[in-house]
Length: 133
Image (cartoon, rainbow, N blue to C red):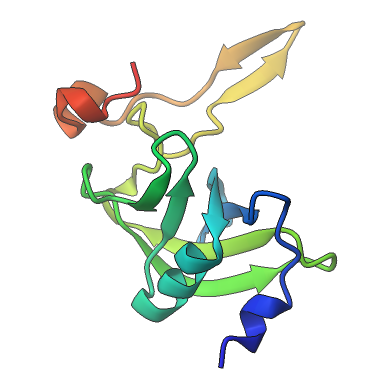
């Protein structure tokens, strides 16, 4: 029944990188990690569920912020070692900084330049124990 999970080349820690991409615009929103359970739950619940390496537990995207990622499609790359999730980002914010995407800096003239505005103050999104600052 879970043969599709056996096709994946998990790393030495039992993880696979997972890239969340907006299903309409194609914009890359974020990258996180999944273990076997997170990927199985993502498929069954039709929402992004990751493995938090820092917390050592499953992380249902949006459980604190409300910024849930509704799954539209799962893709596996040619080497079977990277997952892409085509998602609908509820609330339009994927990053803990309050931006649409975690990839909001562009390399220009030898430095990283912030090019995307904060859409919502992260202090109003998270309780103090869940902020990343």
